[in-house]
Length: 212
Ligand code: FES
Image (cartoon, rainbow, N blue to C red; front, side):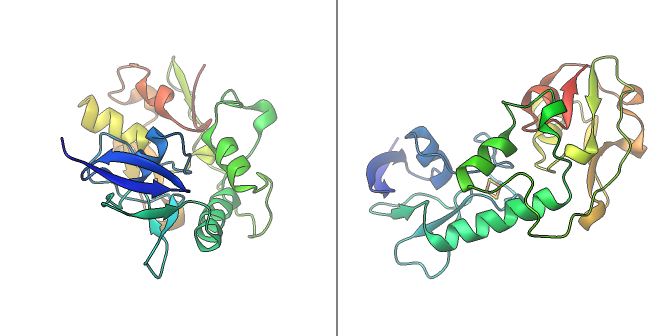
């Protein structure tokens, strides 16, 4: 496979032609915050808006999960404009997300904690008005608990359940602020076609899906 050479944060790296900047950076030990991207998804929906980077010669930051590498490209993951966008995206997320790390089974492995530390944003940020979703927790499954108040709508569980495993027990419903991950006809997960394969819990980057 043909490779291209580029520079990320001053480090010269090589990446397969067509690879996205996000994966080229991660493969070379350079972290870029991300929640919604998957390496095996060639058409990312770029919904989390956390992976902003700056590219020399471009007027505006771009999302690293959608931007293909190019020969001679110079990428800056630490530019002021990119960081400002990423921090705003995170703080908007936190404004409607229940942060309760002390009582969360995913604490220590939660990607929100990692991203907040990387961007130097407090998980208790109050830059934007807090609008809690106050949605009921679903503990109907014998295996897992789903707390939609901790869901970041990254779509990883929906992706793995539907596209990778072909089960389709999980999906999205509603729009805007009311958007949430749920099951067909909004049934409790315990009454859905869930096969308790565990993959959604393993892939969930926050404490939204946890084992009982
Ligand atoms: S990882 Fe790029 S927008 Fe979510």
